Figure 1 (tube, rainbow, N blue to C red):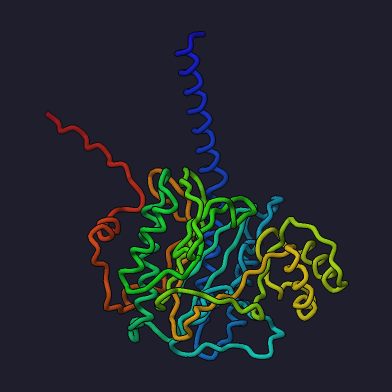
Figure 2: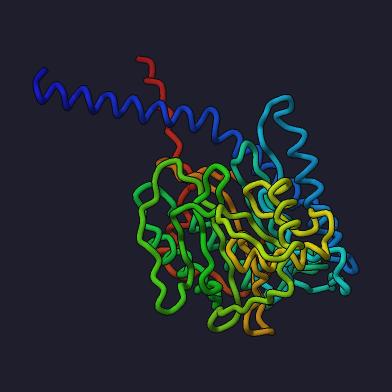
Length: 388
């Protein structure tokens, strides 16, 4: 066989393999992601619908988790497919950025007040394929009493940045280019991306794969430059703040969400060993809340040694260092595709033009042009030839 023929045959084989991968992704993988995305959207709607002055954060977190568990158990019945919560429901208020999910044993339970800016984040998984989502709402606000001022600016900035992100995330685009476009969109509303927040590549049983898109990277920290590829899945996390620098601090005493690692260590404390044993039996590869364990008070103690020696990864409750800051978040799961990104989790529904009245708007011509384009390319149908 000639060299030219060999090259042609190899190219044809590679093309056939790529086509087979594409078919497999579209037929068996993407549908499961989308089911998980629909369940996550249903759960977040239930949380927002139940939210009102006087409701506790714990009550609302429980509602979100219950919907996730009920809805995942109702799909793909009779099949040996792992399914459940990919990220426990969290409600983070005002200057709190993320990961706040209280325990029933907490002495003080936070209740919602009118005007609180609330970030809800949660997620489901089907067959190990995760779909996580988050959106922001304001307690007591609606079309008749819309959000104004800096809260409206922050939420609008997050929404606009999300609209930009989904349009630029295409095969071959660098992660640093995506970061740059998102940060430029946020700046239009006189806001800033929360420092160091990451968009992570997702995979089966994984929400923290190799590739990252980092916003407002910390000084001296330069993320690896990578290209996005066809059919890669990302959890796009856009967290915005009204503070000047976007710096955060963590409150370890409030941390209640953890994730197992593959590390090993011989724990010294019996309490820690018992807690880890329960976690290994109950928890999947995704983050879990301590409230899912049998003895929450014991779990609080036991996870400390586990986390110290790398057996568990804590999801710290992050707060903007400026207590007066307002933070907003949009999180969506998306598949990279040459014809345009494929949404796995639906767009936010509460934050719309009627509920938000920001005085700021996009003035940058490049961003305006980008936002005017469609997310997905559609083939134009050929018009039938005119009859003679």
